[in-house]
Length: 431
Image 1 (cartoon, helix red, strand yellow):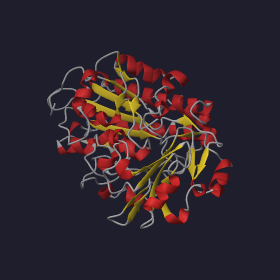
Image 2 (tube, one colour):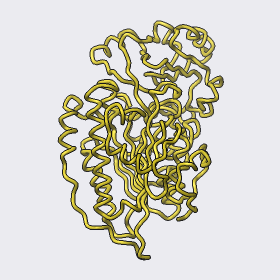
Image 3 (cartoon, helix red, strand yellow):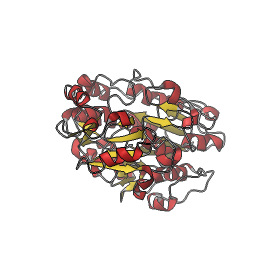
Image 4 (tube, helix red, strand yellow):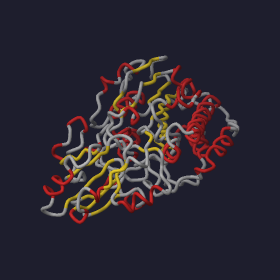
């Protein structure tokens, strides 16, 4: 997500490389093997790990031995195709619900609900924790509803009581908590007595997105961020092995979107195309959401249509079907998106301020842009070994997770048939 999107503060990016290398040297804490359950069987576990903004080609571009090793032991999709818009909150919630943003309601990182006359933004803690914004059923609620315990660490949506329910273990996002501590907390949950131990754990990390934005996808600082999250994965896998759980744990690593390089000279200034007094800008970055003033929709569309060769301007009802971005009241009448590498600004003054501290990477573009694609790597007893799979639509990840965990899925937009080839077998629900 962009540097201001979450309102949570970027974590010391200027010294990221040094901090990541120090974290990589942290020893794996010792652990006794996890005790078997009352039936004498080792617990079956599912770990879902997200590395925000991890582009599909980062393992080869920057090196990722732990992730590539996991892929050799399991399956790796050529890429994971995000839903539109290729933003953090919409896609993280699609991953765990199997619903398109137009169906789960998180249509952008910043939204306006005309029925409630209310705004949602990542910086608004009350909105983020308000379950009414979050539709569908996330995987942790699917598990809890079927008698499992679930745990989440900062996954978008897990701070809200969705449908009146939260996972058994969750916490408010706190950027001061070191990533290593997050991994160790997840492993510590596994040391609990069997009756209190989660069988599904979802972990979120904000790198390499933060560094990719600040420095660009090919920068050495972004390479250091990739090395950092790879070490987190290594730490997690080593912790599972130390507990005797490696053979009975499925580990699924995903990202919400990719990242592309942007150029400060590739700028589209909205005020140069349309009278801003005629429109309310709900969100504007690589894509935009506009609410024209009453009676001004046709005029705004006429002003913007064809006004810039690198800008797409579409009435909500005419959005391309492949983008699945029409059917929610929070999608305003006009949707914009720039071509990859271009940035949208409200005014020339806003552009001038941004040039002083320009971020060299961005996302939010059309999902068909390859740089917007993320990763999916999965290994464990539920998955085939050594499989290189074609690109996977992220709307199908929820079905994949339910199949691995033996959960009956809630209604969703995915299709288990599209992920069946990744599975070692077809587990029965309720395993």
